[in-house]
Structure formats: structure tokens, C-alpha cells
Length: 383
Ligand SMILES: Cc1ncc(COP(=O)(O)O)c(C=O)c1O
Image (cartoon, rainbow, N blue to C red; front, side, top):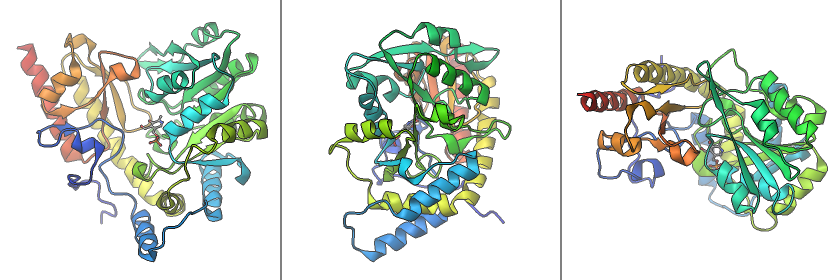
């Protein structure tokens, strides 16, 4: 018996879905913004229904049992021992990235980030009046890696913050313990704060590559880390806006809270409800999801390798494939694939024109159709 259904294509029209409304009325399969087309875990839906039926929606603080559930999950998943007072609740992680940039250093200081990367990594330093310093990831034997020498060369006396995306969106890397140790050593040598966005931590597809929160490496490293996490990607509840930062150093935590000021609103009470149910009762669903996504990932890798002019690296984590379309010579690959009936994210927004990002967090049927459309358009273009 199939316990969870990821195959049924759920109609998301008339739900104000960003992903689907972009192409409303057009025959374009949307594989762009990072949410999945699946229903959330049944216990999450049930908890929300129960909370809604109570009918009173007043100001709500984080339920104490939520901190307990989060700490339990961090300990079980990563062997990371976190204290309840280290948690700072946030209504979103883009918000968290912006608060982080304002909390560390002063106007005119510099923030380092690897590119390509999720666009707010590049906008939040600038919006926070910090200098943005981009260090390109390198493709080394078919795998995206960080160039540690380039990272160190990019550091100036004004550098205060190293922003990590871990696992990395869009290249799908799970940073190994050794790589994280190297980032931590660089941060130590130059007294940098590490801001690590671990929003995709629950979506590791390769069993032999465990996610390691960089703050869990040692107490010393933890003392310079602000880790951003959320149940939103893993349990497909990004529209409910419940996220948190883990900050063990009391001074950093104070600065972070000060930067939040009275500007950052509380988390929506349904966000708390969903997060609690997800961390308490979502594990079986998550395991089934990972099996489904792994098969989708394998399908994408197989199909893309057979498409003229496209290539991609192995996706170790996330439901996002990072595809190099440069060899096709197509000037605007996003427009080309839209005309073929598939909506992808533009690599230019991630700092890498000529690439596209494909979201395979959808039913197999839809994915197969999208891949067939892409292939047919490329083959036709060759003739
Ligand atoms: C690395 C990363 N951080 C943050 C976010 C968005 O977080 P939120 O919706 O909580 O602002 C995303 C969404 O794709 C992401 O990939």
C-alpha cells in the first residue's frame, strides 16, 4: 500500500500560487520557484485543521513544545546540542539573511558569498549597505567546489561576514565536514562571523553525504555562527512563514535581535502549528518524500545528459537541478524553454547567465512531460 501520494497532480489554480500563476492561461509547466507541488504531511494538515477549527487567532508566542521539538530534531539529525535560548524565531529566511547582514559589522563593511547563489545572498548585503564580495565556485571533475585560496584572497580588512548556503542552492552540494572545517578555519584566521543558511538541510538525497551544520563542528566555531533554518522547504510549508536562527553566542544574538528591532513581525500562529506537527510527526513522510525526489533527481540527470547542449552536476541535496545551457548557444534559455512549454529559473539571477535552474519537486508525470518538451525543442533546434 502506498502510504503517501506524490504522484497525483494537484490543481493549484485559484490558490494564488506564485509558481503556477506566473504562467496562468498558458501551456507552460512551472518548474521555477522553490516550492513543491505536493500536499504537506498529513499530520501537518490535521494540526492546521484542528487549530483553525478553534477559531480564535490572537497574538501567539512560540509554543514551548516547539523549541523542544526543534532541539530534539537537531540532536537526532545532526548530533547538534542546542539550548532553547539560542533560538530566535523569524517569519522567513530572506528576512533572516537581511537581519543577519545588518547585525554584523557596520555600514561599508564587506560580506563574502560564493556564486552562483540564491539571489537574496547578493541583494541582502547591498540592501544593508555592506559591500558584496562574490567568490565563484569552481567546477572540478564534475563537482562544484569552493576555491579556498580565492576565498582567502577576497578577504580585506573590511570583511566581517561569510555567508554560506548549506546545502547549496542552486548547485545542490552538501558541504562535507572537511570543507566546512576549511570555511571555519578561514573565519577563525580572519575573525569573520559565519552566516549559514541551512534551509535545505532536511532535503539531502545522497545517503552517504550527511548534512553537518557548520556551528556543530566545535564550540569555537559555534561562537562565530548564525545558522538559519526552517521546516518550510522540507515539509512544503513555505507559505506559512515559520523559520528560526540558532545563535549560541549571547553577544551575536543580542546584535541580531537589535537588528530585528520592532520591524520584523511575529511568526504567524499557523506557522507555529505547522512547524510543531512537522518536527514531531513528519519524519515518515519526509523519508518517503526523499525516496520520491531521489527518483525524480535520477530521471532529470538521465534525461538532461541526453539533451543536446545541456549538462548538469549531480544533485546531492535539494529538489533543484542546476543546468548549464551555455553550449546550446541559445541567447535566452529561459525564453527558449518557456516557448517550449517549460518555466525554469534564470541562472542570471543567481549570478550565472547561461544556466537554468529546474525544480523537480513535482509529480513524476509532470516532470516527464516537461523533460520531453525540453528535449523535443532542443532536438528541433539542432535540425
Ligand atoms: C537558500 C534559501 N534561503 C532562503 C529561502 C527562502 O526562505 P523564506 O521563504 O523563508 O524567506 C530559499 C528559498 O528558495 C532558499 O533556497
